[in-house]
Length: 342
Image 1: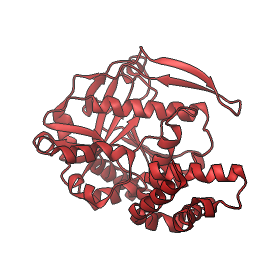
Image 2: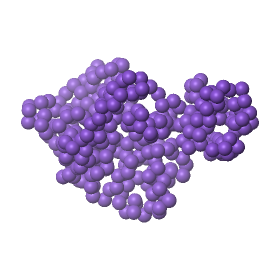
Image 3: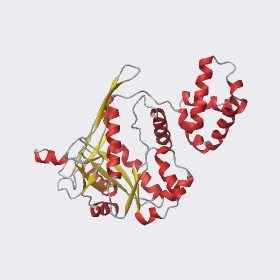
Image 4: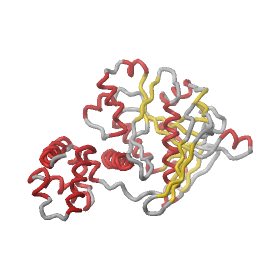
């Protein structure tokens, strides 16, 4: 791209992203603020003047930054971050698989769409930096979205093509004002949790009950989101063989009723609170999982999954699994609707 076009396009993108930059700028790190200053300098005096005193490596670095900014917007300000270990990546990949399992569920009169960003990307892949930048941008601006949104089928069918296009873009960009009227027409937010267990096998083996778990720090985030959009949220727990659902409102009531009785970590047959890493509170809800009354579907075990082992430039070795198949069955729509309307 000629430098003249680069200057013009950076200036245009700065104008387009001005509202987002206004929200982000107060919390940018020194390195991120420096990148923004480079972009503004390029837009103001031109690329050649802005890089006149730079070595060739510095000139190339700023050109790369400008190109990323033109294509990715404010996400170009953020570093992709340190390459995380294999366990972290596997957890992300399993989380993405769980979301796709829920998206595959055929629920009466309900259409599910992807809403939150995904951070599940293999370092070294072509789209790794784009995915990480998108995730960081949305997280900085909005903290946390539910993973999915659900619309009543007639409402979703009434959307025009431009509206459907906007909806399809949600996982890949921050929300803007033009999205608000679409979100307000949703029926519920859907947060997807995942687990490394096969619950049915565990029960047969005589193991303890499993739960839907929420961190204390997540409670206020989801409460604020629910109030902002005047929408309920349901939590969907995906095991490797079964799926369970619970209303966030029901979870809040159960947690609050236990906290009202005692401040110390509390345990009974339906609820347990404990502290794990970094002194974080975790709330475990067993209601409806022990007797399966909150079970809303089954999962085909992903026995066809394929794994790869890769090494990165820093010498670290990371296992990478693509979970497959993505299949759900025996959907209990009545249980899901019961929790949406709780």
